[in-house]
Length: 350
Image (cartoon, rainbow, N blue to C red; front, side):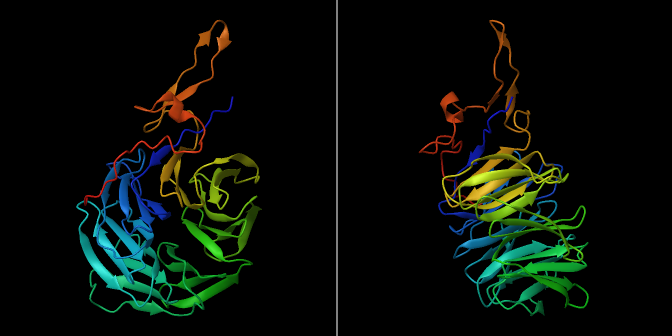
């Protein structure tokens, strides 16, 4: 019996949510950071969506956000021509890195010692965070604004995407290893270290490539323009979201559509699986993040599965309940947003 998704809705942002990222699993669980056009990136507990703090300091839209593996540091990329590094525990701003144009992408090296940035000035930069005053290493070569830049292959290589080109770079020589062109503008890119897989979305296409060679492995076509896709850590399935407000879930091996449902009240800009694969997060033009169960009905985080009982000889449909959530709030997404479980807008610094 199919059960309906009951998402956790995380409010607090006042503009579209354009990027999100999870940390690794730490002794304190895992964490989620969101980038928003309101200029106030937020940190949350990853499995519940509970707000922890807001990083205050940018003077323009924040286009990219990431956490290092143990969530002790955060980095953000913004329209105020800066990237910033933050203390993930105190929320303090640690470093401001001035750029010559809008910054779109930030990514920590595995040891958190280096930060890779990319943006509208078409140049990749590598900052040594132990020497923030020093000039960064620069990697020219892109012909349009950089949308995403990621470390790969144990930081030996770099993957980057501009409008319709994805490039692979050698970290030691800072030279281009390979470039591929795609038919439409790249909307997102995800690097999956287990298996060295690169997930690229453009138009309605969700494409999977080798992160080491850029050779294509497979691709799927969605019914609508896709803005973001994420592959499950076990590579069982993938989720995608885009311009039709819907979330799609596919079997990675067969390409079969497993689920699709209206996920938000505006286009979906970003989706990502949690590091344990138990849930995925989506961020939207509607200003909210939502957390969704990978396996609907499983008891996990704030989701509690109510075991069905027989009433009058008939099996009752199993329910998923959320603490403090009225029954009518679990109805399908309607004309209003009834299932916001955070009423106040947090504005204090972490």
